[in-house]
Amino acid sequence: MLDKDMREPLFDFLDEYFGKIRTIEEKTIRSSRADVLGITDSAIIGFEIKSDSDTYERLKTQIKDYDKFCDYSYLVVGKSHIHADEHIPDYWGIIVISDDGATVEREAEPSPKVMLKYQMEFLWKKELHSILQRNALPEYKAQSRRFISEKLLQKIDPDILKRQMTDQLFERDYTIYDDTAKPATYKKTNSGVRARKRPRTFTKHTIRKRKKK
Image (cartoon, rainbow, N blue to C red; front, side, top):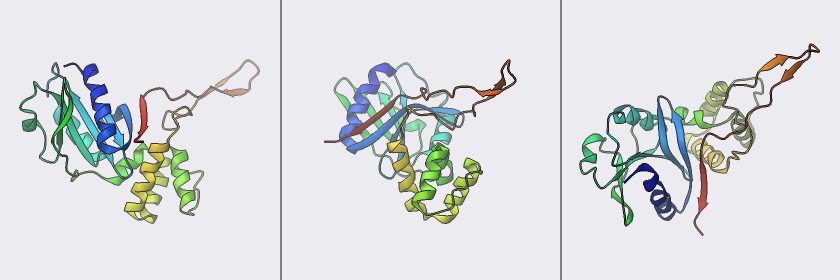
């Protein structure tokens, strides 16, 4: 079974299993690219897909990156990966995709290495400002994303901040400018006026937002 054949059964399964989940495909996390990240009310869940044609060559590095950013992680495999459990930590779950659909072979347990400070890196600056306003904190308009994140981590209870962070990710509008990208640059025109280049629109990730009826 190929990667492209595994995704739709996986998404259908996630809809039923979690009820309310938003999925993001091909999201870069450190030196890895997460195949799928799932956003729920209070957690970020990673899904690394290994099709029948894939090997485990890069998995060791991928596990390190998933563990920092995801509360739970699953290895998603085809039926040919019969020894998948030998390549992942005990706290990773396993989902098997077959012609009959997807099944959980092993439930994921919480990652012992995940840190909220890493997860805050997913947020755009405007989303950090939204959390500041929600908690009646100073806006720190001139400060960097890192500075604002550190202030939020210092001043808000971690459980509350986690929920507010996942709320922002779940409700994110990907049709607007992604301010985690390199800031728009400026160039000189013939008249000597510095004109701002048009900021790019966010097109990198495929977004699925689904709610159980």
